[in-house]
Amino acid sequence: MRYYIWTVGCQMNKADSEKLAAGFQRLGLRPADRMERADIVVLNTCSVRQHAEDRAYSKLGRVRLLKRQRPDLKVAVMGCMVGLKTDDLRRRFPFVDVFARPQQFEPIIELVQGPAEDLGGEFWPTTFAIPEGPTAYVPVIHGCNKFCTYCIVPYRRGRERSRPIADVVREVEFLASHGVREVTLLGQTVEAYGHDLPDQPDLGDLMRAVSEVEGIARIRFLTSYPKDMTRRILEAVAELPKVMECFSLPVQSGSDRILESMRRGYTRAEYLAKIRELRELMPEAGITTDVIVGYPGETEEDFQQTLELLEEVRFDKVHVAAYSPRPGTIAWRKLPDDVPADVKAERLHRVEELEARISLELNERYVGTVQEILVEGVRGGQPFGRTRTGKLVHLDAPARVGDLVDVRIEHAGPFALRGVPVDALALV
Ligand code: SF4
Image (cartoon, rainbow, N blue to C red; front, side, top):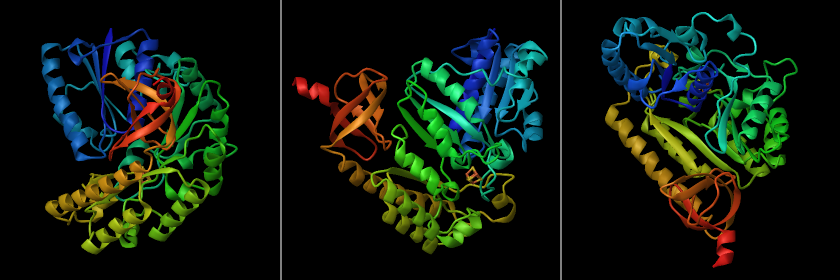
C-alpha cells in the first residue's frame, strides 16, 4: 500500500506531515512519488493565508477527479483548514473520508488499518521521521495561548503543550544517529516552552539538554515571541556555543495603536528594549522579523512608524504580508478590512524595497570575513549552507554535505552571500 502526503504552510505543518509519514512507514506503507500512484492521499492544509487555502481547494479538485476514476482511493484532509470549516468542506468535498485537525493522526491511520489500540502509548512518541539531510526541525511546543486578533493558530492548533525534555532529547538523539548536525527547535512561540510541564523548565534548560547530544553541532529555534523572551533564555543563547545567535522575532507593526488593536501584548518601546537587550548580549546576532501591512485601521502615519522601526532596528530579513481577514479570528469578527487593496500592495512594496536595501547593506558587511558554515546541501552543483546568524551562503568550491567549514565571504547580494572555503583558498 502506498501513501502520498501533500503539505502547505509552516514548519509545524511540515513536521506533522513527516511524523505521519514515519507512522505510515512503521506500519509497512511505502511513499508514492505522486498522488496518482497512491492508495491513500493526505492533504495537510494551512489557513493562515487565503493563498494557502486556495491551493488546497485546487488540490482537492484534482483529488475529486482521481476518486471518480478510483473509488477505493482513500482521502484525508488534515491541518489548519479543519475545524471551523469542516462542515463547509464536507459539503463541498463529500468524497473526503476523514477530516483531522493538526496532529490528529489516529483517524488517518485507522483509515488504512482499522481501529488499532496498540497505536496508543509509545507508538507516536517513538515514531520519528528519517531525516533527509544534515538539518531537521523538532517541534517542542504545540499550539499558542496568545490570541493575536488576526491569527487563526490558537483556534486550530489549540493551547500551548510542551513536550518533556526527555522526549525531545530522545528525538534529537535519533536524528543525530541518522547524520543530523543541526536541529531547529520549533514552536509557534518557542520561548513559551516548558511553562506547562511539571518542573517548568524553560527554553534555556531545553537548549542545555539538547547541547549534550553527541553529533549535534548546531541548535536553532523558531519562532520567538517578544514577551516570552526572558533574560534567562537570552543568556542561555549567548552562553551555549552550539546555540546559534539567530532570532526570528515578529514585530508586526511599529505603531502602538495597531499593536494594541492586534493584541500583541507589547508596545513599540518594549519591543525595541528587547532588541537592545538582545544586542547587548550578542552584538552580531542575526534578527529577522514579520510585518503585516494594511491591518484594519492602519493609517499612513501608522505605516510610517513601521517603516521607521524597520530603519531603526535594521533587520537581516523582513517577511512582509498584506493583511487578509481569516474567518474565525477576532479581527474578522470585529474589524472592517478597510485598507484598500491598492494601498496594501503599495505599502507591501515599500517595505520590500526598504528591506532589500537594508539586507544588502548588512550582507555587504560580511564580505572579507570568515564564517563558519554548515554545508546543508547542493543545488545546481553548488554547495550551500548558513552562517551562525542564519545567512544563506553559496560556496564556489566543492564541500561535503554535513561538514562545518570556514568560508571566506567574497560577494554579497540582498538575499544571499557567496564564498570559498578557506581550505580551498589555501590550495590556490
Ligand atoms: S503569537 Fe499571535 S501570531 Fe503568533 S501564533 Fe500565537 S496568536 Fe498567532
